[in-house]
Image 1: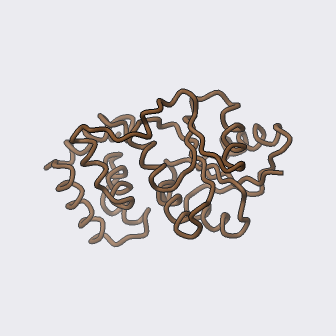
Image 2: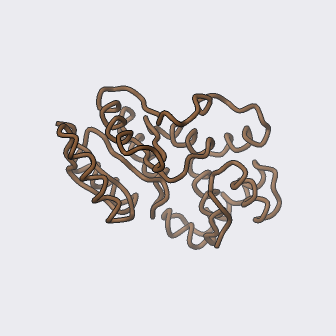
Length: 212
C-alpha cells in the first residue's frame, strides 16, 4: 500500500484528492495538511511514501519542498498545482520535487504520478512539454534562474501583491530580511519598479495575473 500525504489549503480539494487516490485500491492517504508548516510537521511525523502538494498555500509550497528535501534528499514530492508555467515547473523540480501535474490534467494523472514516484521514477504530466527540463537561453529566463529558492518565493509573493510585511510573516522572516531579498531580486532581474517585477512574473507565468 502506497502511503500518501496531501498538502493543499482547500479542505474540499483535499477530500477530493483522497477519494480519487484511495479509489485506486493501492493508495492510502495517511494525513493531510492545509499549509506548508503543517505539511512539514505531518511529513516528519508520518514519513509518507509520497507527498502531493500544491504550491500556492500559506507558508509556501516551494519552501515546503526545500525544507523536506534538506531533511531527506530522496523524498518523493509530487506537485499538483493550478500553475503550469515553464519557470514555475522548473523551479519546483530544481527545489527537489520529483513530479509535476497541473490541476487541469485528467484525474488519472494524479494516480499515475503517485505510483511513478513510489516506484522511484520522476513524473511530468503528458501535456507538459519535454523542453521544461531544458535550459531556456533567453536572458530574462537566465536571470530568473539566478534567484535562490528563498528569493524566488519572495519574488512570487511580491508579484502576487503581498506587502513586504505580509511576505515576512508568511515565510517567518524579518521585515529587514525581506527588504534585502527584494533589493537583490530587483538587481538580479534588472527591474527597477514593482510593476516591472509583476509584468516579468506574468510573462513567465510565475503568476497567472497581476495583484488584485
